[in-house]
Image: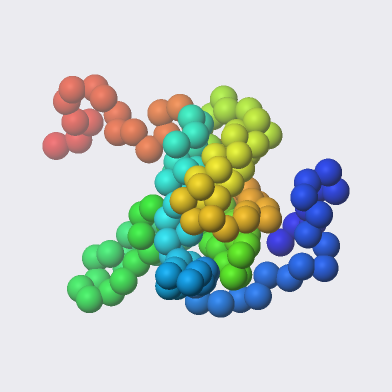
Amino acid sequence: MAAKNPQENDTAGTELRRVDSARAESAQGRTVIADHVVAKIAGMAARQIRGVHHMGGNTARAFDAVRERIPGSTSTSTAARGVSVEVGERQAAVDINLIVEYGAVIPDLATEVRRNVVSAVERMTGLEVTEVNVTVDDIRLPGEGEETSGGEPRVR
């Protein structure tokens, strides 16, 4: 994961310890938050930003589409597609791959995605988000992926 901006909270020397889920204990009991829960929260938060067309790269989405057609197979949840997380006991780091709409100002979009992901994950889980890395895998051009609309088919 990329280095943090020195103006942000200093977490130097603090490592994220890889566990299967985030744990919080109190006198009343223990709360466990699974990694895929954090990934779904981050994915939903990223999708809320105008200019985000799809999550995940084209290859990942193609593999998921094939996997969904195989009986008994499991595919990445649509909400978590394009998101990977590293969750420790008190912190989380998020990597997001997305496809943006043509015309979106990518640096501004990435800033909005980061802000929304950090807010949602911290609010819903209580974990401190140390970083959100955004990778733009593609851009959706106007008319791309749409079928031709001419009324009659070109061939019979």
